[in-house]
Image (cartoon, rainbow, N blue to C red):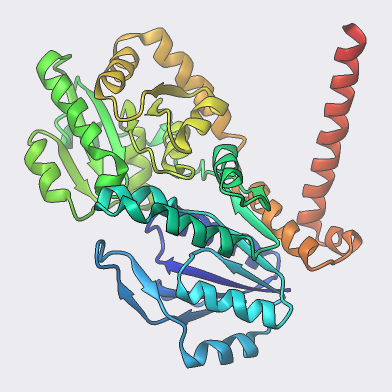
Length: 407
């Protein structure tokens, strides 16, 4: 089978969406599925079964780090030569529209994935009046697909309200060999001047739509009221870094980290504070839980669903610095609560293997292509996944039957 993916951004570890697409690519290559990636930004790499194609683009006038890609004459020839069995659109721009039309014209099944809540960003850039028009466009575009993958049930409900109903859940996994409490480093904490203190961590892009004003306000509340033995550490980069440094002069900014350095930074913190209200999922929340640090998130957006299902943190009122401050303070001062949430979060993280999660997408590729179930089961990895699903369903039916009997 051949899968063509329009990724938009395909720079390794750039953000949660690109990490997710890399994980999916890895899963497909392990199963000998050929993958073609079209993107305006690519990390050069050579792997058997993987083909990369650069798409021309221009920067967004409001946020130059993101770009809009355009269809170009070679794009059709590239797709013709690749001969995809499924076209997967991960970015809803002009190149994505072209690939949808190409798929329709050639009777190729379309899968889409909803990674970024673009309409929620518009208000941050003073163009909130465009929100209705953007949703109308999204409704048209996403309803072209046989399946639209979304990361959480909340996003699924949000899209259903906009009359995008052909959705299925594609959750996110964790690499517990990278994010692990064993990587806690006293040397790193000393570097942060955090010896004998507690560390509140943020990890992500430095942009206002991540609700970093709320983070700043929480920083100020701790400075005004205490406890005083708190160090704020912000991992990442972005266009507002200068403003963040100016408003939080005592905070630590280690820059953009990846791999073992990132895992060690997570494990060396004590609380993960992530006030964003615009996340469709929030990979960073799962990474924090796997590293053994309880999280504080907003009651709006995808992150709250992870905290609710895992039980590994607290949920604060969106954009309410006082609420976030109180949640952080509880975790930092109530040892029993902290240890309980930490243990619950670690147990949750162990169940979130990428391989099992990505099998749901790969199974959908087969299904939408009308490939018989018997052919899928021949793939031993996917076959095991299917057998696991069937066993789980039978087990749940048995449990319900027992409960009903008792009732």
